[in-house]
Amino acid sequence: MQIAIDYTAAARQGAGIGRYARELVDAVLATPSDHQFVLLTAAAGLSEGWTRTRQRLRETAAHPANLTFRDLPLTDDWMARLWQRLRLPLPAEWITGRVDVFYSPDFVLPPLQRRTRALLTVHDLSFLRHPETFPPKLGAYLKQAVPRSIARADHILADSEATRRDLLDVLGVPPAKVTTLYGGVSPCFTPQPTENERARLQAQYGVGARPYILAVGTVQPRKNYVRLMEACDPLNAQRDLDLVIVGRPAWLSEPIVAAAEQRPYVHLLGFCADADLPALYRQAEVLAFPSVYEGFGFPPLEAMACGTPVVASTASSVPEVVGDAGLLVDPFDVPAWSAALAQLLDDQTLQARLRQAGLARAATFTWARTAQAWLNLVAAPRT
Image (cartoon, rainbow, N blue to C red; front, side):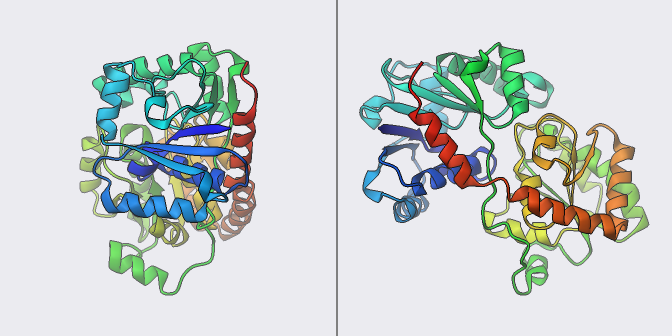
């Protein structure tokens, strides 16, 4: 079978969907199969980093001869303009060649020939569930482009049961058209620290001299960081404690950054390389994940894999990931967040129990299992 994959998000986005696409494609290519894979990428400006990525993918693929790259001399913005905003009817097969299946891991599909089976991952419907957390122009674009792609897709993958329910309830997608496919956790997230790990974090990021609560995720309203800071204020007043937030500032982040700048104990680190995340998780006292809406949520899973206790939101898909291996709190209840964080910081027995439960929980989410399920879906006959 000839399978084309839009690799643009994997090549261009550091976190979130980019990580999902990278990990999934890595695992799919590493799984032995007879399929031929074509990776389509809007590659303008990627230069040497993209060359190294292509080499790595060939080296780790189970069958390197079955892997082909097709690069568009465009940025991802221009690709979206041509295919989604202007809706130019230029089928992707003009670039990939004839394929049996085209898979997009990033919400939207390009124009395709009728014979090609279209597979699409929709990570969440936050732009419909919480439109107030999006800039108007971006929200308007997503409200048009995503439902249009959903209608054209032969089958849709949802990151969680919560997202699957949203697709059925909000957009009326037929149940048979949607399959839940959970992500995994990378093997790099382990509880074993490296030598002088805390000292390295202090030297590189200026954190770790004091105990810290960690939060990971793009700085934008949906992540609920202002309420988290308000919950941490009384904790910081009672003990030596920092709040470290890892994630690049995105849309509507100005009030969040302003709130952080008013609190000396809050450290906004911006985007951190994947290689540094395990150490940041391991050295944290606790991971706080207060998001008001998530399609899946990698940070709680990664923290649990590193042996770090988790306090997380009760919203949307988060309980599916955390299960009973963390404390779950209403994302809008600031006093409850203060109480849960204080309880976990003070109760060593609870810390130990959640560490063990978290390690066991994280071990059930593997990219190898996700990749095999993905391959089974791709090979299913068109209905």
